[in-house]
Image (cartoon, rainbow, N blue to C red; front, side, top):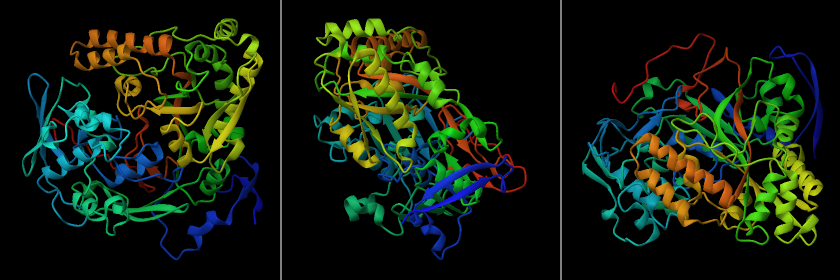
Length: 559
């Protein structure tokens, strides 16, 4: 049976009284009745994880947990989100930029005590590349010599891939061409080091092993579906001395009201994501010191399934894009400083400026294009669906509100009718991967600070494409940019690629650029910094009343 009660904000954290009616399931209180210690930090993390396998993880919420459990050769600085030494304490690059030699720390061990060696790195990268693993992010390793051919099955012998253990503590990576952001990639979850011995013993169920050997700052204590993921400090982690928090819980709560209620009553210390802010209270809450908004590299967009009619016609896709009033979306629904998007790559990316004017709001031209495609005034256009992922917030969620606005705009401007299809997160991912949708809501937060992390998504065969769109000329431009060492020439090639993507392809309809958002008490929670990747390593976060003790983080030059 549902419970309903009234909550007055203001008692616990200095808010002016705000009356909210809260509906919640008693199931959400499960963790309160278990006889176990409260975690030192409790984080509301939005969705229930689909997986905690670094090679398979897709969602931002899942990646937060995975990055606490497993580490790569590099990791991200919590302040700048730039790569710094991780499992490797230093490395060298050959003069031609084609070979990296990584030197592992000599004190590395799994959380269960066994040594972590160069062979573990090689195994982890080859596993992520293997076609049997079916990693959507396998493309992050295509920069390795023969990496793409191994993933496609053209090469069967993994020893031909450009990653090798030279000895117990040395890994050599051989690249196809100079890659300016390769060190950034080494910090990404797909390249994290995972336990071969456990995976080979348990197969697909390896994450159920207890104790689970991990290479990161935290070890997995429990993963209880629809309750929590609990992690504990890994005291065998190489940098355990600088990991300040012992026990952390991640709660899969998708309801903004429930998340805010839990935070206000002291049941949670940190809430990630703007989706977990009651939209009707946003204007009030943004004025409070606990609520933090900042610029990040992220784009909210619509994916079009170009394999299904009528969306296989670029004129239809262009008509849909030109009929969207993005100002209306950002001012009416989002309201936290989001910027309307008329191209795909967000502003602020290092060494790149997106070409302007790729998209426009032009309903007249949209109607003309739709008529040219055979649907004057929307006549004969089939009814279609817009898929978005559900959560406990239901129709009040932002994704649903955006869907309703698009539905109204396209009906009013183009005379076409769209149905909203709300599905659970795991179903959403499966349908998108199988191209079992027509249009769907999508978003992308940069994996590293380079335009490639956005534009590389849409090359043919990319696991993150998921639109069915393919263009050999686009593929060629992206590959040419990967090989170009002159920054100005590389930027021009990428500008040409983005122009082609948005004017001759348009498999996506950008809507707006994200802002990062979270809420926590700045006098209680320390170690969270605003950075463009919205990346906040767990081992840097701690709770306490005293000012944080600042400690210089290691760098490539000063490990």
